[in-house]
Image 1 (cartoon, helix red, strand yellow):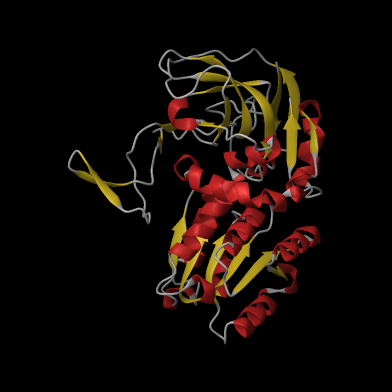
Image 2: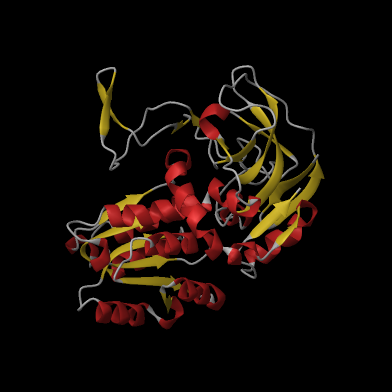
Length: 373
């Protein structure tokens, strides 16, 4: 089969690889129909995130179940599925706050929000630990807890967004509003920092809460224009932090933004969030930070070196989106917002052109790249 293989920083190639085989009874093999290039993959592609080489890229993909392990119960051969970017068990084991409340199971209180949890190894598709979906076929471990059956009548190009970027943007926006203390969403001023594909998904999701003001921060004119067309006020960070802060304070009677959704995954973006929000504000960080950036953020953002932050009493939620657990809720919103996402489909190309696709995406010349094997 043809597959996109990571060869080193800014180097991928199309190679012939053997078809994947079932390794455990809980595995399935998926024949890939649509696969996409995610912004978080640029951390590896650019050499910012240490990794091995020789693995198949890609953690956003849809397809049809081609082969089934004997222990798989939730899908059948021929089912159309979409696969979240990490492998999950099918258990109720980890909880997070959820408006549906709690239930008792075997004497233990658990939220109803979680239907799965990541396996101990935290397997990520498209990594040295697990080959990804930028190929004609892909093996999916723990299939019952990982894949979701595709809803009827959803275009594949929109469906592949459910593997990562749409739920992640949705999750970032939801957390920002959920964590706001004693404030109605309609009175809130919120900023989304980063207007790549995930950031624009966060913009659309945030607007569903009808905030009083929504600002979108980036430096790429085409991205800022899309954010404007969706309903956010664009701010170019190249104009300087003081310029952004002046505009935000003007819109908030001098207090600063109530919440920030940080999507970039770089410490300067997270520091910008700390600077632009008000005391007792909220930061929802869904950017993929590598360990080097965490050190910088911890020192500058959470300790006294960052002079303003210790006095602000900021609430921070940070981490990967649990796609599998919020899938139904995120999908419901996507189904009603598909018409806003045409900008995501500006570059659809055969998998054989993936080398060009990576280069275009790396240079921010396209909003999103979707491959067809």
